[in-house]
Length: 163
Image (cartoon, rainbow, N blue to C red; front, side, top):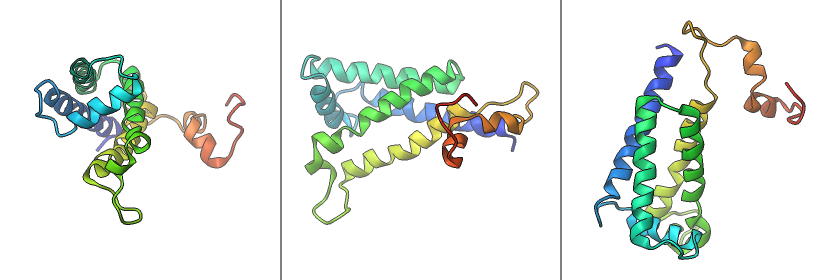
């Protein structure tokens, strides 16, 4: 399978997940994450946005990202918005640790597992963002890979110098 097909499959699957999870939030009490999302947004906004409004805004954000990923539109901007969303999904670790961690060391509740699965989503988002293909469908020459941030980070190059 070519690299562009894999990237497209990742983007579409990311879009389906975002669309589905977001669409559930439009219907009260349908999303299993509704209460967690409302409580988190309430904390993040210091209660300035009513819970009923915040869940609809989140639903619009997620469904919008779903469409962008499925249709392959504004990929980099969509990834940035999704990464911002993902950062926010980890805030319950700080706000509601009793809801996230079990009583045993290193154990997670179902809510904690729901949050931690986002590590996989973050990896996919980074993969979608960093991937660049040549117009002919061939892989990008290796000199472009050497300039990427992850490559320079892994090999310990100065990250503040131009590549």
